[in-house]
Length: 214
Image (cartoon, rainbow, N blue to C red; front, side, top):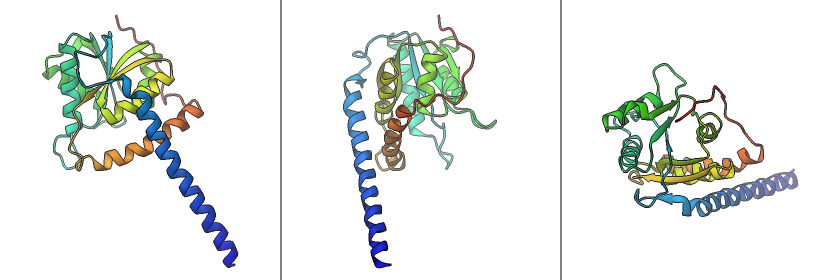
């Protein structure tokens, strides 16, 4: 009995250790691969016709404004006003009637001076993978700027380039590291899952009609 328990314990520890090593490897490799394609300065990022703004909730569960959302909106509006892009795809979750990230982003961008006819809505960007692949498959973009915080852009740009999209990341201002502790912790596992998605060629949950951006 003791020998069996010892074997089980050793197997568990080996698997646990392998899992930790894999997560560390995934995070290091994704950060290293995407680093040269990420920009904090709008004047230095390559010009593209279209940018994609990745969605997040407008407010926190407490009801207070979500700084991730606010900072992404500002970054997208600044990039548009700089002349580096002509159109913005807002891609996010609209899985419930009372929750609509794309429309929230559209309204916020319009309040920042971005014309409505320059904004395209993707209502089924449930995951970063969905948003990235739909930018190519539905919206027809082979070259793209992705707008989010740096930790998120690392993963999104990596995914895009692995799927033959010439992608660059424009980094919105991050939030306080303590306020974003839960999000940053979740990101470690999300980066590891990227390799699973690539290995099994995971597709977006939904397709749809092609959207032509002039």
